[in-house]
Length: 118
Ligand SMILES: [Cu+2]
Image (cartoon, rainbow, N blue to C red; front, side, top):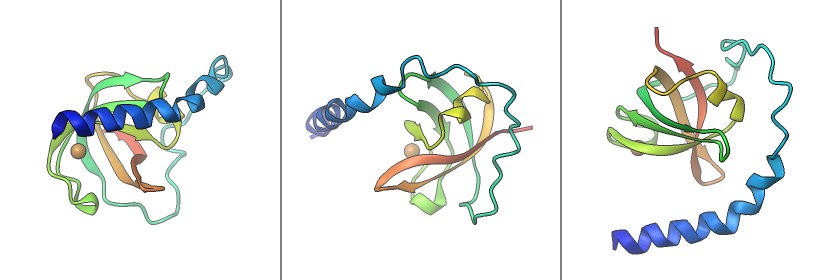
């Protein structure tokens, strides 16, 4: 069962891959990002504590060990998230303690807010 769902996911991701290469070479010009400028006025889900385990800038994904995410009904675990804005990945490093908000974005879970924990 686990193997099957993993395989299905792999196929789904492979099918979606044409997205990623379109970004190659497009990473110039990332200047000074103010980590706090992204605090939007929209009502965001409550922040969850996490720790960065891995960052994949190529695919816009981040692996987090996270606490309970109440708005997603998700228990604490380590998992890979997609980030809504790739610039979020520039703000953190592996090993950082963070606070983040994840929500469903077109049916898939994505990190919609990310900040370093102080
Ligand atoms: Cu999770």
